[in-house]
Image 1 (cartoon, chains in turn green, red):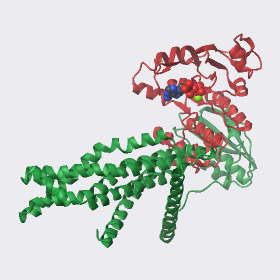
Image 2 (cartoon, rainbow over the protein chains, first blue to last red):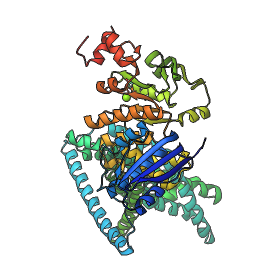
Image 3 (spheres, rainbow over the protein chains, first blue to last red):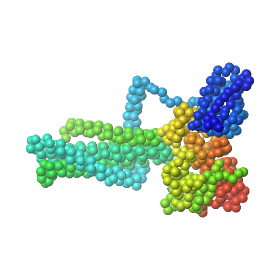
Image 4 (cartoon, each protein chain N blue to C red):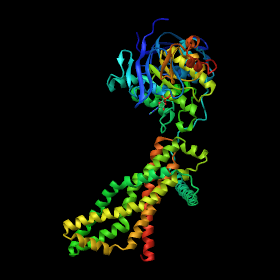
Length: 377
Length: 252
Ligand SMILES: Nc1ncnc2c1ncn2[C@@H]1O[C@H](COP(=O)(O)OP(=O)(O)O)[C@@H](O)[C@H]1O
Ligand SMILES: [Mg+2]
């Protein structure tokens, strides 16, 4: 038995081509392509009928059907009559089923390559559009916040509680670790320089001011951007994929109030608190270096820190924390709400949320620093 | 008709989620080349039964045999090997959302056959044509309707010409004409390729048109109450619940 498919062709009449199929027409085996037949039809002048002889055909599956579909498509195009009678009955009926619905012709084609200039133009347009969307989202959020102040916002208190727990308490371990280490690192670097002048006591000032005014807020912000901003984007993005957000809208519930507002509130509340906690951890980190490496007394280090760090510094640090919290929540929720309807779109949304949040944090730090400089604080 | 060989044998099966027992004492046989209908009210555990048969969830008790092989008694490798010869269409379509329909159907072909890209393209084209979706190769799942997603899911399940096909509510959400074509397709695949089909469905018209064997899961007493040819069941049953199901509540 031939374990492979074979074709022979003969012209039985002037306008009739008989295609004889024999052997084992199974996918994955050795099969002749449809090209041979198509070439014959193209070359052979005046062939108007194609008939099949499949008496020698022993086995068949999809492999035969794809071949027949190809031949049939060509025949339709060339207005050649294809007589299906010689085919195995099952194959004939499956072929009829496959051609029951005409092919969709206006189907979209894959995008071709675009020139560099087009690409640049598209990117620029996208950038401005995304800036516009960001402003619009901000506006919507402000409206939702006003609803909240008027006591009319629709959201579930229990959701807010859960989110606060997720972004607050559950973030403590990672914030502790990061800020303790940052304090330690700052102290190390400072110590090497300050020791040259015998001024190691000022390590306390350095670590205290740097942490309280800036570093605690930035580090917490970045941790939260990765931890919470990404999570928000993934949550809302998945809801978008499942049309849950559409369902909220059609139930007359504003997704801005129901989903975005509690997340924003939770981060705005918890970020300053996390910053406060991060301050303590950072100063502790510095203290470990000061007390153990530089032989500064514990009390002495404490007093020096208290003297150096003014209330203003604390205020600026906490304010930055609040701003960063809002930025992380905004970026996460916005990217989530803009998410497309596929699994990879959810991934993109999460990535983009983290990047947006981190860029936002750094830019707003610059703005706050420059403003403080102007105001002389 | 000659005596048919058993393809899947289910014996004393109990399905449960934790302590919540869905169905107990299921015993029935799906023969080679059957179009086997799983019937039952919403939420009675039809989809769950399917997840057990395709190796996604272990039964709480009882056995499933594929041929002679004890499916859940075997190791993961054996189960994988058996399931590779099955095609599954999930109730929600479960198309991979970040791939086009062509890529969705091509993935199993690329993974398990050594067909050339050109051959794969032809197979994809054929399978889409068979479910009435020729020309939709480059669409993403989010760009087509729910009924089309179902049909594309069927095309993907058929990609490898499996020996057994599982369809979870294939005709829900389809227009009557497409649903009828789907019935024809199911019959035809069985006729010409000898594929065994396990179909979860509520469509009475389909049940009687295509099914030659079935099981009825009764949610009120948490077990199966009948198995056999649905036409015969309709003619012979005395069970009010089954009769009600098979006549849309008109007889009881
Ligand atoms: N993952 C799950 N965990 C717990 N219970 C479930 C789970 N999936 C389904 N159920 C329960 O099992 C029952 C049967 O579900 P399912 O098999 O999907 O029903 P159907 O017959 O409609 O396909 C339902 O009552 C549902 O509540
Ligand atoms: Mg179900």
